[in-house]
Image (cartoon, rainbow, N blue to C red; front, side, top):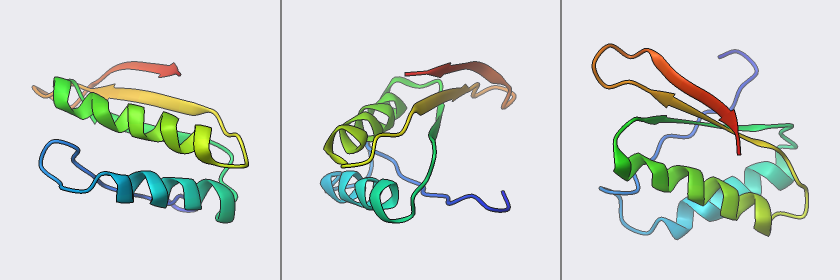
Length: 84
């Protein structure tokens, strides 16, 4: 992951997800990222991360595209990749 910024979060188990939204917004604005990729497991609770990312982009002054990658829980294969 050379040249990438990695953030890990769990919207189901972690408290204060507003902090994640703020950190993502800061990354977008100050780290000058060109895209934001959210990799989630196929379980429903992970989908909240995609929503947080979209909210952060909406809040940021800079606009970047968001890509969602869904990983299977059985064998870790990529089930889908799409821009949201």
